[in-house]
Image 1 (tube, one colour):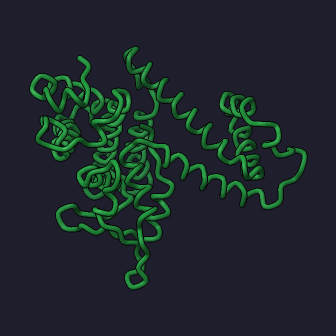
Image 2 (cartoon, rainbow, N blue to C red):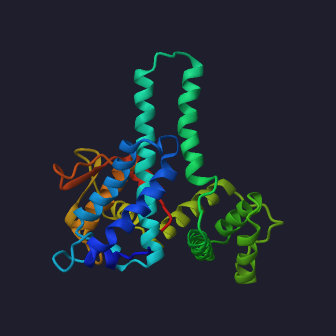
Image 3 (cartoon, rainbow, N blue to C red):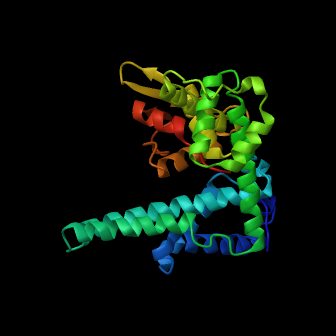
Length: 304
């Protein structure tokens, strides 16, 4: 039974079984080797349900303010739920791997390789195999891929004023054999925007680095993914402190325009889960970001 964010807010009792079934199905797929462990399954599902409760979406009705999630399309909302499940499942797999490292009696390279295989298998299960068992999920995945392709095309076209950077990206697309995306770009770009490929480009690697930086920033700016939005605001609003040699920003500063403080906290929690921040909601109203973390945040992107 399909459901929407609106259903979860105003009809939680009737919708919760469908939500639970959806989360359970995706949790089993993402947990891979742990998918038959009921404790791990409950931890992943419980994590997502707890997040929905904490921001006031699940059963909040008119008692809690609307969140960014309320404004997402159905496809975007399902993608958000699936991403939340996947992130928590990967986190559980990593923690189980660490437990194995400390409790196993097997030493040497064979043991280390086995532990690596556990995480590799989990990662492959998330991105490979048969990830879309139903026509509905297949259609959603294809729509998401097309949306991302169009977004990437838009951001590449934004490099037009810097023809050498644009050419560096086009060359990279050729190297990766991204023929469909490349064909669409060449059809839409004006001839004057294309750099003469027969001419050698000085400092080509530098142009490519600058182009990658602009593309990442453009993708973040265009994203409606809550975690990406919060990551972008951290990089934009963080103020460097020479005393602590960290970037500092408070939650109130991040909660502007269409984001509430609860939205910001949810995004921060996800960034902590990703290993990009060290922040505790019950202790810190000011987020402290190291230079290394700031660099990682500027590179962070997730699909809707």
